[in-house]
Image (cartoon, rainbow, N blue to C red; front, side, top):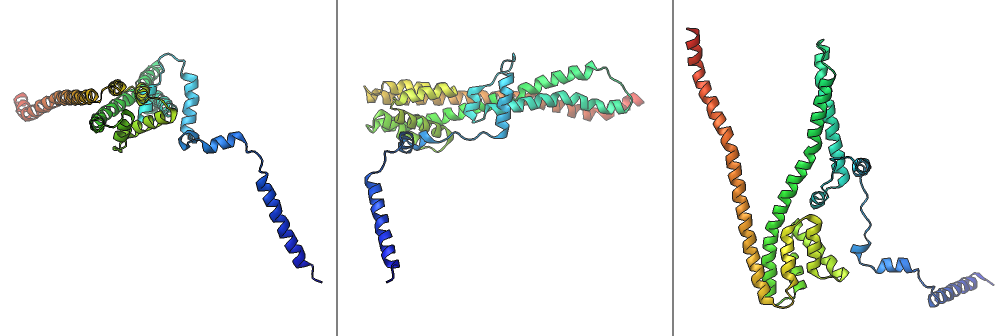
Length: 294
């Protein structure tokens, strides 16, 4: 008698019964993994791994942050999406380059047999290092200023969209979120993230906008939060306030552009005058030389 079919059938039935008993008496799952699986994806995303430059820069920052004069423009860097470690590494590299420049410049003098006092390259190196050390701060400040101007332009369009949504009888939170979803630029992405966080954390949307303005130093956004704070009582008044703030913001932006254009025109006056003087000297040079040689 062949026992293989009987053993195979018995094993299959036994495995099925074992799986059935396992499913009926499933043990209680661990609480932490269950909560992690049920939490929103935006709240469970791991922090991005820091690159090597950021790690080195933060190591330098931890040792230089107590030195007088060393400060990190945290809000400007956060607005631009730059890490503080990379910023500090860049400042340190520029300062080191400034210290080495005079040493490299004195090599031809040494090879030519001309000796210079030791304090000359040392003092010049310190001055150049100090100037190069603050250069990244100036660059970040200018970029952050441009970014805030760009955000103000985007906010002007955003205010118009919010006013239209409120005129269509949309709720305050709905008007803010729907208007933010229209844009695709980085200012609208910042607004979308703040309003999404407000919805997940169950806080008022104007509070999220206030925190966003404080985090990135965006004073123009505080006005929107103040206006929307009173939006639950009178929609028509909020609509008029939004339209008036949009008009005022556009006027401010146009005034700033006019001032910037006038400043640029004034800066071009000196090079133009210098060029005219050089042309006149070039034209008069042959006549002057002839008069001196006669």
